[in-house]
Image (cartoon, rainbow, N blue to C red; front, side, top):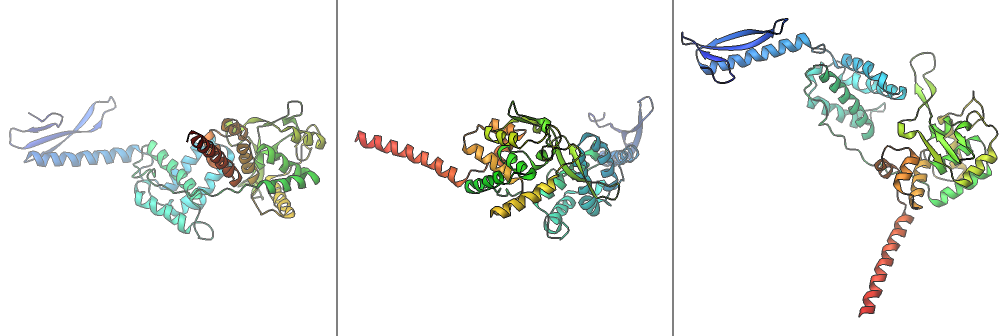
Amino acid sequence: MPKKGENIYKRKDGRWEGRYIKGRKPDGKAIYGYVYAKTYRDVKEALKKAHSITLVTKYTTENQYHDSLLKDIAEDWLKATIPQIKESTAVKYQNILKNYIIPELGEMPIYCLTYTHLEAFSNILLSKGGIKKKGLSAKTVADIMTVLRSILRFAAKNGSLVPCDGSSIKIKKKMKEMRIFTRTEQEILYAYLLSNLNAPNMGILVCMFTGLRVGEICALHWEDISIHEQTIHVHQTMQRLQVKEGFSKTRVMITTPKSSCSVRTIPVPENIMKIITKYQTSSTGYFLTGCNDHFIEPRTMQNRFKHVLSVCGIQNANYHVLRHTFATRCVELGFDIKTLSEILGHASVNITMNRYVHPTMELKRENMKRLSAFIAVNENRQDAEE
């Protein structure tokens, strides 16, 4: 009698026989193979080998990626992914593949990529990656590994044997301290912008008190501003993307914002809306130019912003500091986080808290003063009781 589930029998001639399924007929019926040995243990080992050979044969005949190189699988992954993502994201993925993944791992068969290879790859990026070979930031390396994991999952989903999917490779990202304007710096900047109102300065002023991104202010049209409702409707963003065709390496594109949550309607402070109304020279066209066929792009706004800071004697900063400062001032003024999160266009309040809200020393002192007041009240009460 065979042991349950093993298909191993002792024959009348004293030998042991093992039976296994080595394939299927077109109608689904099993095709059996047989192994023989003098002992039960030997035939069991022979069955294991036969099963392994069957699996490898089945894998190499049925799997389209059984001996494909990573670069070939990555190409198929990108073709399958592009229809589902924004063009800016597609450009980012193409650059990651071209500059990092393909040069280092492209010639390796997918079944050879072990944990050791992936860990070594991430360490090389951190220590020697980049044009200057001085290492990439943890954020950039994390983005590269995210793309690589997606490729490996794509390969596994299509039947490939993937030794490591990369999920166990962790990149420690340091939280970079965000720059915000002090209240004094913001007052100096505000006074300068009011005294020198022109297209770029008007854009800087609006961003400082609404939290708009630089791409959003550049893509904003006068039709998106409701003077009566005192609102701005954000539904487009402008960015410069790399392109393959033509003589230019990049081109400016206007697309929907980075996420559906970024499509939003923002109430504008009354004082700022009065300035906008006074400045208004057109009812159509881009907000910064008043023309339908002429715009100011983000790169120009960045440069103009840096020039303004220099003139004001304020330490150099990226345009995004306006958004950080707006969020921080709102918290200082007691905005509830859900409201602020929706004004900024975030998918969750956690993003608002973790990335954009930076309590200033003044706010910390104010909160500690409240604690001091609480302590004083309790001390006075205790003295009265005594």
